[in-house]
Length: 85
Image 1 (spheres, rainbow, N blue to C red):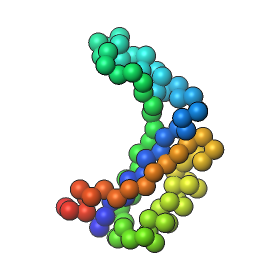
Image 2 (cartoon, helix red, strand yellow):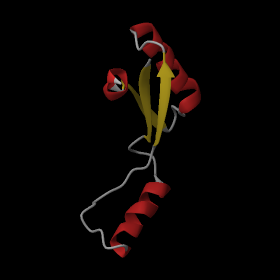
Image 3 (cartoon, rainbow, N blue to C red):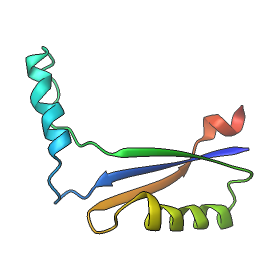
């Protein structure tokens, strides 16, 4: 078994009100080191094998279901820690 991670983030030019809300709350809570926050989504997909065909299929899943390609970017990666378990 392998775990594939799909991270979905708003494109840089898209406003991120949730990230701005978190960023605005940090100083009120005493955290002053963070200069910006962008909020996205993370999907963990369990697969039998993380071969190239499976990763290509997961990229299609990410593009058609997990993200909105008009306003979001995504990345697909294999969780090496999950493979070693």
